[in-house]
Every structure is written in C-alpha cells, then in structure tokens.
Figure 1 (cartoon, rainbow, N blue to C red):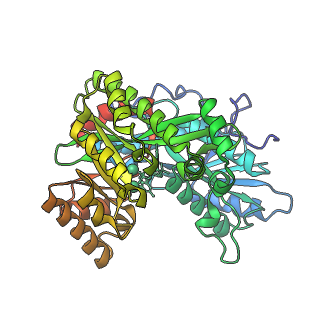
Figure 2 (cartoon, helix red, strand yellow):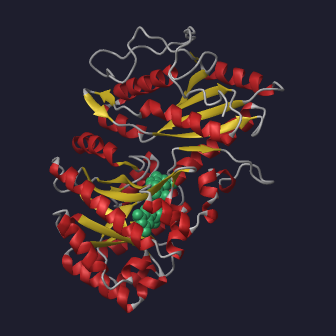
Figure 3 (cartoon, rainbow, N blue to C red):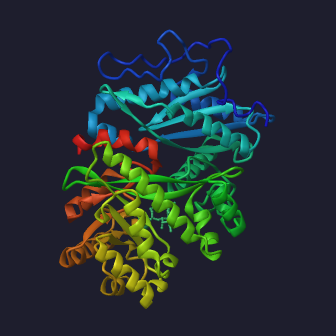
Length: 473
Ligand code: C2E
Ligand code: MG
Ligand code: MG
C-alpha cells in the first residue's frame, strides 16, 4: 500500500487555509470533547459542493490521476433531530464535519453533500485495499462519542467509495458508483464498501457488493471453524423501538465475523458455509451466550425490562438438547426466560416433530418465539399453526414500499390484521425512511427497527443509545 489511504495517520504537515471553515460549536448546545481545540485548524480543505465537484471533474480527467471519492453517510441522523431538535442536529453535523476535516491532508477535500452525507476526495489511492483502509480511517471520526445537550452520543456511519480511473473519469459516474456502494454497505451492514464494476448493465446492486460479500461462496466450513477457534466472531445489536411504550424494548443480536483478511463480514457471507458444515449450532450457542452476557449488564445498568432477540438456524431446533441449552444459558446469566426472544425464519426443517417439540418446551419455559421475515415464504401461516409463536416480523421487502405502493400497504395491513387477531406482537423491520415509519404507524404497527433509528452496533455503543433514546421516544 502506498501513501494512498491518506486519511490514515495523524497530521503533522502545515495547515491549509479553509475556504469555508466550519464554525465552532455554539456554547451550551454541543461541545465535543473528542474534537480538536478551536485554535487547531484542519489541514485539508472544506469546500462547497460546487467547488468539490469541479475539482473532482478536473482531477479525474487527468491522465495519471488516482483518486478516491468517499461518501460518508451518518446512520440514524434523523433520530438526533427527533430526540434533540434541528439546532442540535445541525451542530452535530458541524462536529462531524470538523472531525472529518481534521483527518484530511493538504490538498484533500471535504464537502457537505446535503442531508447527513459528506463527500471526501482523496488523491493517490490506487487499489481497493487502500480505499477500504481510507474509508475505515474516515470512520475513526466516529470512534469517540459526540457531546449533545451535555450527553454522550455514539454515532456511526457507512462509507461508499469509488475510484478513478477504475470506476470512471467523470463526476456523474463516480458519484453514481460511490452511491451504489454506499447502498450496498447499508444493506449488508458493512462499514465500508468499494464499488465494483458491474457487467453490461453498469452499476447494479449485486455487482456492487463489497469483496467480502461477493466472495460469500468461497468461505469454507474449515475457515469458519478456524475463525471460531480464534474468537473472531462478534455480536452487534440493533435496537427495536416500541412506540407504544416509548422505549427500545428489545435488541436484536446479529452475528459478525471480523475476518483477519476480509474485514467485517455480514452473516450472509458465512452462514451458508456454517450451515453446510454443521457449525451453525456452535454459532447460535455462542451468540446466545454473548447476548445474554450483554443483556445482563444492560439490565444491571438500569434497563430492567430490556430483552434480547437471538436469530436461530433450523438446525438448532432439531437438537434434542436445545431447549435445555437455552434454559441453562439463561440460568447461568441469571436472566428470566421472558427476557429472551428467539427468531426463526421459515424453513422446512422447522416442521418436523422434533423441532415442534423443542419449540413447545421453550415456549413452556416462557421464551418467546418470533417468525422472522414473515411473508417471504408461502408456508408462513402453517408455522403459526404448528409452533407456539408469540410475535411476527414483517419482512423488510414489504416495509420498503409501504406508503408508496397499494400492494405493499395491503400486505402489511393483512399481516397487522393476522397479528392482531391472533394476539401476536408485530414488528416491522428494515424501516429506513420517515415516510415508512409514519405509514406503518398509521396502519397500526407501532414496533419497528431499521436504519432510520440505528444500524446494528457493537455492544459498547448500545448503553449510550439506550440512555439517550428512552426519554425521547
Ligand atoms: P434478520 O434476522 O432479518 O436481520 C435483519 C437484517 O436486516 C440484518 O442483516 C440487519 O443488518 C439488516 N437491517 C436492519 N435494518 C435495516 C434497514 O433499515 N435496511 C436494510 N436494508 N437492512 C436492515 P444482517 O445482520 O446481515 O443479517 C442477515 C440475516 O442473517 C439475519 O436477518 C438473520 O436471518 C441472519 N443472522 C444474523 N445473525 C444471526 C445469528 O446469530 N444466527 C443465525 N442463525 N442467523 C443470523
Ligand atoms: Mg432476525
Ligand atoms: Mg428479518
């Protein structure tokens, strides 16, 4: 790697004057201890979007240029506006801008692209590995919490990247590619995604998946086993908001693999191999243990009613000892069974007698069973009949177009109706936009999760999120 990932290291070079300096935080609203003192000036240049794109166009057109365009998108920015108001939201964006600016080198550019997005233009980035490193470095601007209204706020972001000349030589193409990469990052729950050249149709979502995800077929069971032995699997948590109670009442545990060479892998990249090699159960047991351990700590910190939801593989339910394993894990962490929710996706293996009897035993203990991704498979209703289900999660493919397509509205309404008639809790997943949230509430769904509120985050970012969101909802 060359000097390419230039956001990487601490700055020591001379300061470059700002074209458009970001103002210091207003007294009383947001002073952020993680920021540089007001006298220290960023070494990069903060410019208007017009100037940013002009420079990008000029540089990308030069024969020997090697550029990276980064789009840094702040997660759940909307929830800050909701919780603290627009003035604090604006101050928060200024703080983010300042932190990003301090990571730039002379000649590198930063701009606010609008909304909660920032654009960064780096030079001398030659390959995807350097680009990923630069993206991760940019995200270090989010490592320390931000002080909002005198309370720490842990923020996260996703980065989508495109490279020139590899991905294009003009603003439009590079922006389009970086945006598609950003979309893939959000969808796959990855921190940084570099655009990949699509086939004939140009930039397609499938073609733009990060190397990690597009290599999903190449992860072997042996690698998964080695990763487990080396302790590389981690659990991230995504909050589930209940507008009825005004609280985050559950956190969904989602497994991640911090692969030494490939970076952070989403479950889609390794669960199929784990299933094939019989390791899915080992992952489930570890995630369950880890989630219970974290839950115990959050409850001790005052979030006494908080619950955790753990995703299971169909294999888990086919083991005669599974209900016993769950019960002993809860006991070990001194948690009541009602604090645990187990999420199952529809699968033909769930239909056999062994699975049904394990599910019944778990339900007898008081553990809640949820059908995840409800509505995606034709047989959903059958499971409602066979298994002691207490909750449904309406799949994000239906949530996506709610409020925009009559068909999606009808499907969501129908699922809300089924849940209501059967006395089941209903959760909408994949809520990304205010429009979707409003429409879901209008239709009668008041429990939701999605990037609008927060992406899945590491355990140590959860405590602050819970403290912040409780009174605001
Ligand atoms: P799931 O249980 O339906 O989890 C929700 C998935 O949607 C997560 O993807 C999450 O990151 C993503 N997501 C959340 N909010 C949004 C949003 O607003 N928009 C979009 N586009 N996506 C959103 P992830 O973490 O990649 O997990 C994928 C699936 O892998 C999960 O789907 C679950 O079925 C499975 N999985 C995750 N963790 C585990 C685990 O520990 N054990 C097992 N057996 N399966 C797991
Ligand atoms: Mg789930
Ligand atoms: Mg789901």
